[in-house]
Image (cartoon, rainbow, N blue to C red; front, side, top):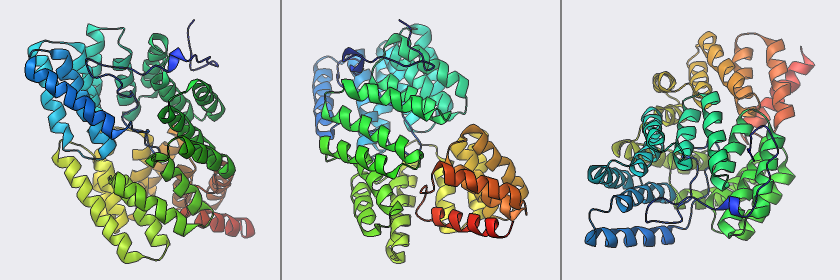
Length: 433
């Protein structure tokens, strides 16, 4: 039976079987990037053991191209779970070695996954397409293609790739992508339904935690703090070590004024996975707690993490723009965001470019991009708030008021810093239209 993003999907236990590739089994197939919600990692100790077994096999069978491909993909996963981009060159070497031994779709798909991880989404799309040409029934390759198309702002193509993945192998990986695709289009009830059915079939604690985190994020997007709290707590009960669930819990704590608790959770997340985004989140909470010197230190560490990512083959002017905005350098932020926008017209990029232009006092230009961000992702309260700021700066009080009402209706808790600003601005506009 065809499973469609446009219909309610029945999930069986078998449907939650995770993909494997080559000789390294059990690698979770998940979107390479997911704005505002990092996909739950598998246990790093188990992954290290799989890498070691693959290395041992290759010492005796150096011509085993499947294991070379599997090893490369394992390094990609290890880089993600440990926030260590130095694994990327190792992954590239292993995957290219696999192709040198034999031209094969596993290695092409692995190179696509690596390119996604490095944020080279055009290359990722090209590798995935080549893999699909060789094997049109490779669901994993369609997932890699979906991730790339999503980040390149090609929503229809991403949906088509996800639909093909669902048709071929309707597992947790496909349902996660399907749920995110629906979420991006504002179909939150359908996105939640997809993840709840996946949760009903989940047995492994890591899978339960993953589903709970997705459900918590969906509740958060709706401004449902109680629902988000329940989902994050249930997920942590299944997997207390989950950093993504700790991020969610910190977000809710900050929204409810529990800044100390939020800082504690954010510190744990940043220590375990020191990526630019986790470090920037931690810095924001430290600043909210009045610890400016500590916040500045985390901002420096975020910059260092970004440089390490770039040094290992990554491409990420979006983070460069966000770091520049955090430092108050609007000119650098505009330059970086414009570069990223030319590369990929994704909603988050449009939002950051709009913010940067607004910070630089170029609000007429900013309006084009904040409007784009809201058009692409109309149910994101953060994007709508930034659009309201630009409208207000341009003197469009009626437009700003309408946007701020939408922010309030979508999620008044969207940011512990900007949420209160939005509420005050709306109150002033309502008092003095």
